[in-house]
Amino acid sequence: MKIVTEDIAKIYNQKEVLASVSLEMEEGKINVILGPNGSGKTTLLKILNLLERSDKGRLLYDGEECSYSSDSGRRLELSRRMTMVMQNPVMFDATVFQNVAYGLKVRAEKKRFMRQKVESALDMVRMTQARERRALTLSGGEAQRVALARALVLDPEVIFLDEPTNNLDAISLRIIEDLILRLKEEKNTTLVLTTHLLSNARRWGERFFVLREGRVIQKGNREEVFERPTSVFWANYIGMENFLSGRLIREKEQAKLEVNGVEVDVVSDREGDAYATIPPEDILISLMPLSSSARNCFKGKVARMEEDGAIVRVKVDIGIPLTSIITKRSKEEINLAEGKEVYVTFKASAVHVFQTDEI
Image (cartoon, rainbow, N blue to C red; front, top):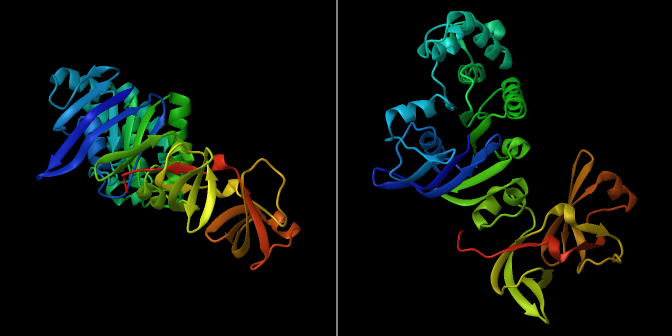
């Protein structure tokens, strides 16, 4: 199912929780809504699942408009095709099996099919052995897995997941992550989930929507959102390395970003105050200037090195600090050490420049 929102807004106690939110959740994809706590993620999820009413805007499901206040028959038909798993799921005072079977009973599923469906759902979340346990005795991770099984047993086209991997034990985290990928690959399920945990989102998300204070400040694929931020807030939130603030100037048709007296060649047709990021992987380190087409080559000194397995993060001071990522083998081959003079080289096209009023 394809879900589109157009200028969705929501107000609680005279406070605008969501403002002009326009999104397109891609069918059969893992759609991730990112942002800090309090940015409106859960509220948006509930509106998409028709659990809450938006104060304005349009909701379209497969191109047909529907909302919380739409015809009850149409709303019920859509609700049966979608389900939601909350961050802190409520368990009934019954067995795990009975909890998972609850939705099927409400839908008057025939008993001869019910057991098979429940057993299959429990197997997917690896809770088969716990079928007769009282649900109220489960750990947080186990309860989350049972709640997911309770959603899966209904075979929905769309599953909404609110912070599905937050505060989970390592086993439950791995099981739920594996299941998210299986649902997308094997069943073509549309998944819409919220999270503030960036490492999880990077691993399996496909489309990303960044919320801040109820507004969408960026959206796109993994590369666009995590490597090409369009706001200072988001660049800082994701911990972008080599985040620069300076002024764009033009010299003979060539654009440069002047940062603390250092002029970096960039690709831009603008002028004025601007920000930029440079992926550490695109910065080369050498003991002598490299002969290449790269327009940026600066002499500096190694300020710090941090080893992480086979990878070394090298911070070089060229008048501004720049971080490069090299292999441990490369570090040893050029006998790199703190205080050593080196050259850093990178292309103008590797510098992502943006100007924005969104801080």
